[in-house]
Length: 578
Image 1 (cartoon, helix red, strand yellow):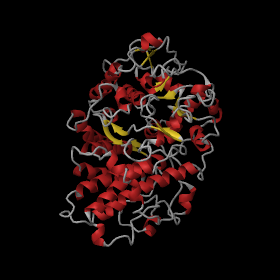
Image 2: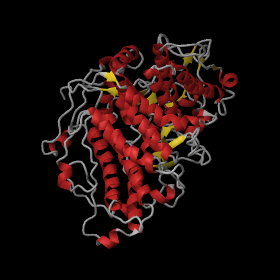
Image 3: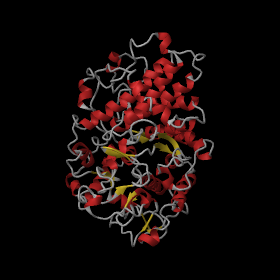
């Protein structure tokens, strides 16, 4: 499906015209063809392909749809680059200070995501009018478009909380401009997103012939994720605090993850954790990839349809990756979190008392598959040994010397392309099976109805897999002096203990996958966790000396000034005194 979807992007762009003054710059083509021509299967297919294509063609290095640029607010990563002025608007996000409603990075992600929603609605408008006899795939394609629309609204809601919902595919540009971002309460907004995923769940097949099209399992996973976010109610419009945790929503999480964890979905864990982050075709769209953005190379287009959105994350290795920008660098705090005790268990209460020493401390093997550490080879290639020099830090150590491994590939692999910046064809997994397992475990723990043991079992499955994930690091203990140890939990645990384990496991398993900040907000842990992080990191990374997270403000981005100005008075700014 990679080639089919993305090489038609340029054709489809010419079919959708700019017409809306606020947040949608792409609307239904008008005056292009008559009704009979518009309802031809080939034209409908092109609009559907267009809705997929924009998720690649419409993103940007500064507005990645993975949201890595906006996860620099978490304790997982430093912004990186060559200093605080390099991407200064993201520096403001990183320290939770000086965030402006006029900042271009806020408007950029808003506009790009609504453009994606617009493409889906353009296809939906025509799909809903076509006769099923003339277009037998009508219902399936409607489900796919509603899935994509739900994905766009989900990302926007994570970022901005109160958003306008473009859920009427037949709206005119003027009607779009008159949408309110407070038409629905926070809880109702999540339910609107769930409606799109539920339709997809009830309609999509178990298997799609073309990779990249969502399946029933993908819809179930996204439904579960939506209800997990919805469960942590933020019902007070004057606060972002968690007011309650809704049991009915948690039960829906359990319901929609049921088929996935029983194997009925065809999904499962990769034998090796690292397989999820490899560019080779035999590893892409593997058993753990529930739904992924499809990137490609050597497909006839210039430089392929590679993942340029990760282009800023490539380190600048002189003579090798010249032009690498070295952003999104793993934090010392994250590295410390992978340390384990002599029983192979995390040390969440003491992990940041001192910094990890790879020659004396035990560590979860996932550390060496997530973070490039000085003294170990970059992307597992001994030709490129990392060290604490400017070669591995454009900021000369301001942001440390660690490098993300999940986003990058071996420079000698043949899977790197340069066009100003570096890119690779490696897919971006939006939802992977391990995340589904952790969502289910979290719901079971929060429900506290006698199934905490099952939740611990799910967590232990990931820890057992971590211990076996040694395909590319089997020689690390002997060659580089590291000590690896991770073991499952044994015994019986209280709800409080189990929830602590779950939260820590999510951090380790999903580190640098851009979930961390949103998890902290969802749990209501952001203020406490991030202000402690700022204080602990200030002596290691001086940019945090003035950092401070303000509750009821920094959990969400402000609505961009440009969007409020163009909304005809229908948008209300988020709380926080922006």
